[in-house]
Length: 157
View: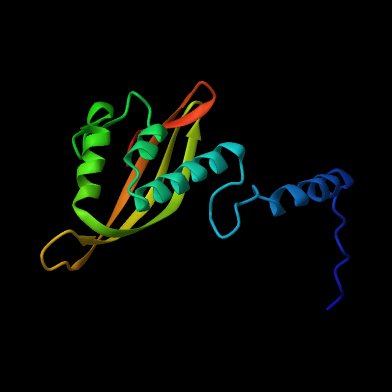
């Protein structure tokens, strides 16, 4: 059987293929050890999540309130900006020790609005005559709005 002659690709197709190769090989840069795009907004939102975790572990209700928007409203837990500090302080007053892990799974930014999906895992020791360690894990969504150039949490603590 005779060999078939090799087909030559048109020069334009070769040029487009060569130009497109780097575009398909490179996706957005990701923040190390996450599946979150490395953008200034995503990094700022991750910092808020970190500050929330640190303030929660320190049982610092005031620091958490500073991360919130005056429009904060969490209908799932029936907490508004006006009741946030008192609700947090009541929780902190009932605990002797606590450890919080916040693992952000995804961040979506749309203009001046964003949401961060995260896993909230807490281990806590209640103030009681016979204290016992307890734990709770939940998938949560934090919503945020940009106010005066800074991200503020509108729900989801």
